[in-house]
Image 1: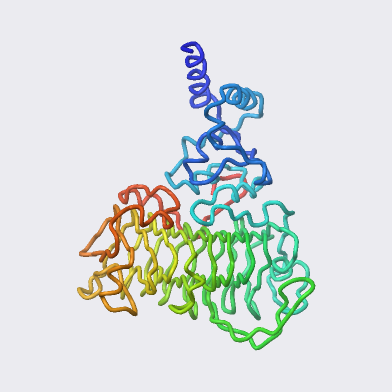
Image 2 (image 1 turned 60 degrees about the vertical axis):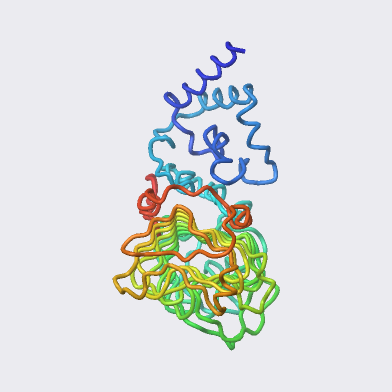
Length: 436
């Protein structure tokens, strides 16, 4: 047994110190060994239905040897996941790869939190958007973003060049789509924006979404075989309506008519991560109304976002469901940061809250639309949050950690690390051949 342990230890040391990570593969030794720690299962290239328990990759020495030998025999790259890590588990999963352009779909393996199973268009082909125009919402032209998102097949959608897309009507997405803005400067702006309605497995990454406006009272196509009448939309940046397995990551959102990201009507399994949000009033609504009890099973993770200048309230505002607000940086709010009504469970962990100078706006929380005798029963807690400039969080409900089991989706890092975890929030600059 001691000989086995010695051999295994030498193999691990060999991996750590001698073998650069092979980023061109959608899995590797480091990924296998750390998958469970990142809050997601170990994965196999391209599909997620050939998974094995993560523990097998630690306990089976022959498997470890096989993976080490395979890495030794593969082409070596000047890349080390151990040397460029930031501590942000999403970014550390893919950003160390300078060949990201040829390994785009690896991103789908990197989600965490309640939306961790969102695969977007991972199992489909690449679709290149070549035309920024939105000529016709009923008969979109091939090469446009609207034509891409309505297709029934899984698609990983990328952009040929920088572009500003001003939509005529809501962009109604079909299931199993990734909108990936890496490598181009892409803005969806100055018109209606993105609607995720009764569809699933959506990834939106690396897009500037701003100045979104209402539209409607028009026909809009939502699939190759169907179009229908749309009433007036709210003017959200991203509107999630009855959707599930949704991941919005590394976007920059601002100045929309209603919400930046709103999720209502039974939506669940959502992660909103690494975004930079600014210059907006009602930032994020999670839950349709106090009377809409179907949102009781909603689960949303809000992680590693920077809530920046010019924000007023709703970061987020929650109803009914379970909400994990973890390792975000709150540097601006005018009214409050986190609010809710209708008995939501809010688990705030490891965030940094910098209160405004206004002495009447220091409170992080706002319990809404209920007398104190009722909201005192709602489960809201602050665990390891950093309160600056007089910020304070008003907890309520049961103090037992078991009350928050459905509102826990990943391990929180210490709040002292929030500046480094969120320093790259928003759209990244990604150039071919270089790390993002």
